[in-house]
Image 1 (spheres, helix red, strand yellow):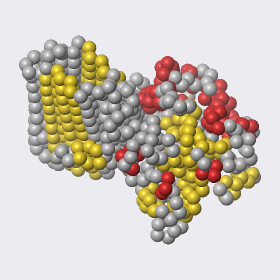
Image 2: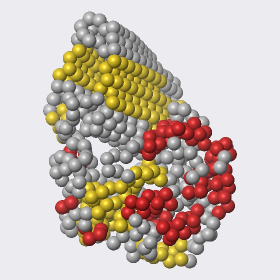
Image 3: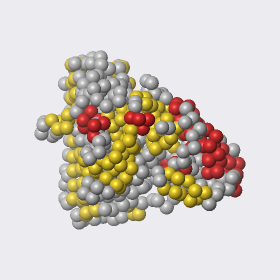
Image 4: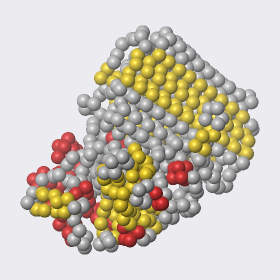
Length: 617
């Protein structure tokens, strides 16, 4: 038995076989980190569980792409990876048949509603807290509510906090007359949403659809609206706070509203404050008659991102389009309008008000287009939004997510946000296996084969999103690296900080989403301004971290106490960013704290399974 001490706790572990992945890691740690501080169990526990025999076998298999792919299920199981396959048993259970009664699906999960509610007359179905908190919900709503009359559908808190959510709405509401479909807080805080709305509301007649807080705070997902509302008659659609605060979201609207008669679509706060959103409107409103589209605060305060409007409203008759506060990004994006409004007839009008920088208009209709307040730069902070009644309201930021440095004083009471890690449990790969696997968008076909990820599958989306984030050029002054082994993480941390380093994280998740009291506080490196390396998880089959250098910070350790009993319930690690001058004016920290870039410092807790490296005291 070997004794190790960490934070006053003695941990007894069996002596490792010297040929295991973990034993190799320990030797690497001792060689490259110069101090004799205890090795942190929270990080060492993420090392590969492979024993010596399995490690040797998988290292050999990894040398051949085809060999590893043919053993992928064993590889995923033995190495503790996150894998799923489209043909496995995760297919949703069918809830088939024609239903004449109202249905209430509360706390329900992973079902197939094929042809459900077809030709239904009146009534309402409610999906509340459906598939909430599941790891990989998979739902199918094919031909749902097809040719119904006056039927209402409500999706409230649908697939909330899920990890990889896959939903398929094919021929949903096709030919429906009247009624409405409402998606409220749909797929909120989902890690990788994968939604398909194919010929949704096609041939519908005045079937109103509302997407409110849709995909809010999601990470790296995609939504596809194919032939949505095609040939619809007076089909109003409203997207409110769609993909708000999302990270690398991608939406495709192909043939949306095509050949429609008097469609009325509203995109309000769509992609607001998102990080690198990508939206494609192809043949949107093509040959529509008297269509009205409104883009209000679309992609406002987003970071970079690009939108493509190809043949948008082409050959339309008497259409009206309004872009208000469109693309007021804090980092310049790239938008392309190709054949926009070309061939339109009647009194088609297009207005661009307070439109941002770096847009391309090709073959654009010269008549009936107005540009008011077209901007060369974007500097305004969007702290307020406007509700349906025209009243300004403050955008919601989770309480306690950001706070001032002055709050870290003994005796202060504050709210702690939800710091729980919602990603699936995985392990790092040993460097010997990792080095033999491709990791590049240029080798995506190989990765698809290895992890059995067909095109347009959820697994392919997981892989593409992680690669995109890792291949993104660093921001000004940033040094970054994605690491899939602890050895690689050690290399990056010591490259930035030197070899005398220590890594910390918050001890547990106690205190999440409740008031806490601050106990004793200790500033790392004497509370001096220093630099650190912060590492955050990315979703990928094996454990992958996005690590980056963070200059000009102060790092603190703080006892977290129960407000009533004053008992210690957690040992928190917080980081305070001293220089915020390069941050977005619309950053959630400034919304929550009421300031602007460069005017204040901003602090936050290190969440579960995230970590920060600093020079050892």
